[in-house]
Image 1 (cartoon, rainbow, N blue to C red):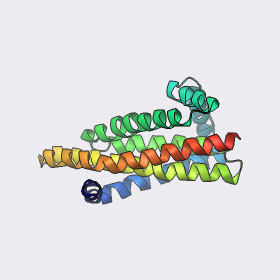
Image 2: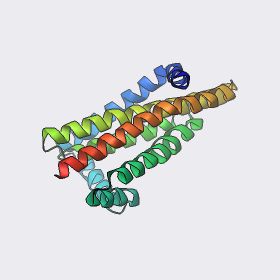
Image 3: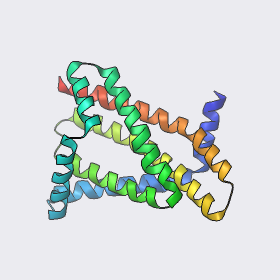
Length: 195
C-alpha cells in the first residue's frame, strides 16, 4: 500500500503537466474525429494512409490472431507490453528530455485515433469499449508524457535530475496499472463484440 501511495504522490507532483497533456490528447482526438466527419481532404488522406499502415503492423496482427483463437490473456499481455514500452515509455517519457516532444507525439497520436474512430462506432457496445480504452490509455499516456516533460524541465534548469528519475520510477506504477486495465478492457470488449 505504501508503494501505491508513493506512486500516486509522484503523479500528483506532475498533475498540472498531466492535465495539459490530457487536454492535448482530447483536443486532437476531437479535431481528428471532427475533420473526418466533415470529410476534409487532409483528414481523409491521413486516415487512409494510417489505416493502410495498420494492416502490416505486427503487434496488431499478433493481437488479432490471439483474439481469433480465443487467447485473451496473450492478447492482453501483448497489448499491455506494447503500450507500456512503445506507447508510454519510448514515445512520451524518454522523449521528455526534448521538452515539448511528448506533447507533439501526443497530439499526433490523438489526431490519428480521432480519424480512425470516425465511422467505427456502430453500436453502444463499440462506443463503450472505445470510450473506456481511450480514457484509460490516454490517461496513462498523459501521465507518462508529464513525467518525461518534468525530467526535461529538470535537465534544462540543471535541477534535481535524480529526483525526476525517481519520480518516473514511482509514477510508472500508475501508468502501468492504467495501461493494464486499458488493455484488459479493450481486448475483452473487442472479444465480446466479435460475438
